Length: 380
Image (cartoon, rainbow, N blue to C red; front, top):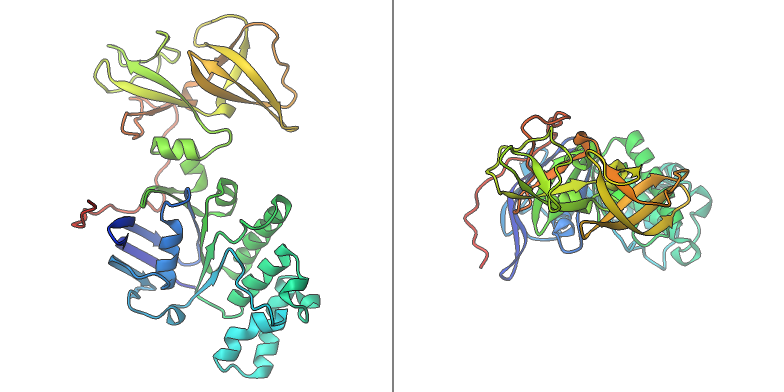
């Protein structure tokens, strides 16, 4: 196993920044997931750890040793790619053991290590087959076996499940989690799929436009997003946002003049503009017209997902989704929405989270938060 320390790392493609002044530490034996949209720099960061991309500035250290100029094969990392990258003319056994053969490992030891890895991955009966004779899930297992047989200190996963169908993704996700529990090898997993991120990660990193938006456990990041981007990116349906202003008492007043949460006050100047964020699953229905703390809802489309209902509509002209249990009785007349103060998130105009003066739920202690450093690089 091994730890990874990334210090003030930058990556430029010409004059275009892909990663900007990034700091991150990966603990020995942990499973860290980097989540973000396409083009946010997550795969570039993974490739820099592996040594497949040069670093423009900063340092990457593995087990305390700076590896900026160390060749990929000498870093103790094994990478599992999105496209499997198997040799089509080789059997499963030959694909898994190829790196051992190149390294000059004796044939008997190769056979023993290949057999042990194949048994762990359920590939024991497929060792004589070629990749063309395998399903997508089986090919991904072979790709994982090729990485495992090297007994690396670090596994690097570059969106390895994105080519699989939904059912296989679930199956492979469970297998990856089970393998990590058994092997306890430091793992860094890159994905744009929030379900993969939430279910696999010990530590979750959310990236956007080359920088880290937030680091923490999946629960911390979901329940206390530190920016509007994180709040909107995590969750399905995504978080609802309602424009609001701060009155002279520090309360959040919605566009229609309502202050549904009078117990929440913010240390902001009167007239300050904020956005109130409400997750669809935190909203409840109140039949009838407006009551204290309830917000009139104009329903439109009801989606039945089998185990959950998604009711889409508007609040004061803003699109809002409500996630309800499947057995919910849908009112036929006027309906309002209500959310407890503990479910309210607030964001400033620049996207930063702002806490009320007396938060109903204590903010979780940050986990693995990376320090931020000023950078002398200029992106113009």
